[in-house]
Length: 202
Figure 1 (cartoon, rainbow, N blue to C red):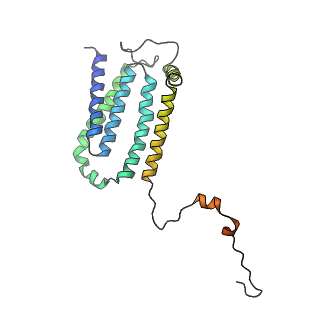
Figure 2: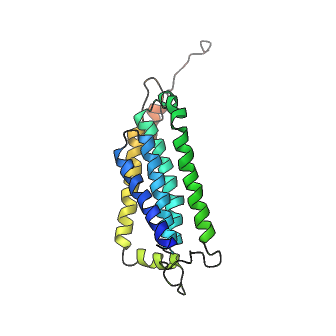
Figure 3: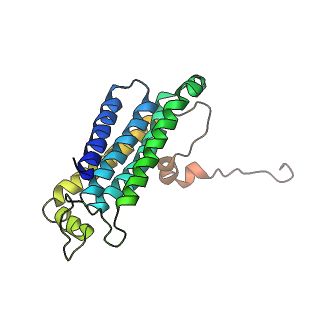
């Protein structure tokens, strides 16, 4: 078995296990951490295939989105962090092992990568062409899959607005700005003219 096959099976099994843990764990914090592990594993698979642009998108864009998702989960579910910290020492060895695997994957990928070509010198990597992966991906997205790409962006926008609306809580007794009332007010509602007799003012 070649090194490329070993790395492929390693990252694939890690991605499948992490994806299963995302939907099976009861603690939302653990599910988010498992989702990050799945993203990193799939990103290394894309690097092996020579699609470094998609790999960086998974790490930069989706990892950032997961951080926002983590924030919304905290806001919506009101997690008791005091209870979570009680088992910190219990899960510390597992966390050290997972962190070690992350650094091991990073070291292996950087060790086997070709700095000049920007991709791994593996047999599974596609032959280099005159154009870059970014240009080819942009051509496909904005020609063949333009409508699907726009619909996906609209769905993400609606999801973001829905998460903000769900997490927005109004407290009683707190004065808030009413823009509609400010815009629609008239002179009679804003100014009160009082006729004060001479010598009886304030």
